[in-house]
Amino acid sequence: MKLARVGPRGAERPVLVADDALLDLTGITPDIDPDFLSGNGIDAVSEALRAGLLPALPGAADRRWGAPVARPGAIVCIGMNYAAHAAESGAEPPEHPVVFFKSPSALAGPDDDVPIPPGATKLDWEVELGIVIGRRAHLLDSPADSMAHVAGFVLADDLSERALQLEVSGGQWGKGKSAPGFGPLGPWLVTPDEIDHRDLRLCSRVNGEPRQDSSTKDMVFGVEYLVHDLSRYLALEPGDVVLTGTPEGVALSGRHPYLAPGDVVEVEIDGLGTARHTIVGGVA
Ligand code: ZN
Image 1 (tube, helix red, strand yellow):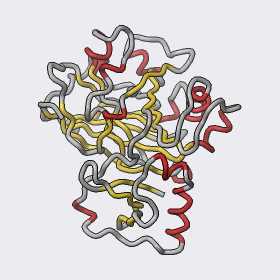
Image 2: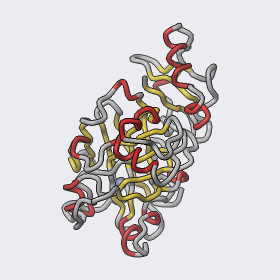
Image 3: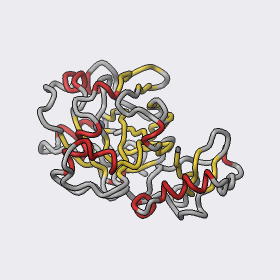
């Protein structure tokens, strides 16, 4: 199933994305949020769909996509998780997962404009597979236990301002990862049964020109490994999002210019849709 949130920012409605319609989920839940995910909400949607109880939402074509998860408690990010990207960033592939955090206030819809922070000159794109946690994960016994804690997957762009991330950071990356709009997510949350998360093509384009083009099978640490490993250090809660790292082909490599106002970034993952956001001047 594909779940989404549509409507104006702050007033999104939960929907199920069907082949030719959006089906309204407000009869089941007010939102796709941690309470919905931890309360077997996805099972309730599945049953209502089978019973034909979900009405179509009129005027669906004109609606804005919001981030498909409301109010995640944490956005946990993995760095250097593709060997070729580590190399273009001047680093060896890590021995253990590299973890940093993006503020949940950076979250945005997939097609929302991205404002450049004042003075920023090194804005960069990063297409990533996002994991949405469905059940609390803490001190899991093994990677084989991980998928029981995963509600689904989302497309993400881990937008990054490299000067803030690397030059004034004291070695911690959060400053360059967390500005409002730096977390476009969606359009959909896709349940694990619909995709093979171990081999998904993921790519990005800037103004229509190809940048990244890789597969999740090139990850240094896969989804199951990451959820298990993170659970050793923190409790992943329902609704939390884990961004699993980006492949090579970003501006930091020196092979492409950084983003400027007017540029249009597209990121795409097989089965998870496409996000298209325009870089704009000013502050959100
Ligand atoms: Zn990233």
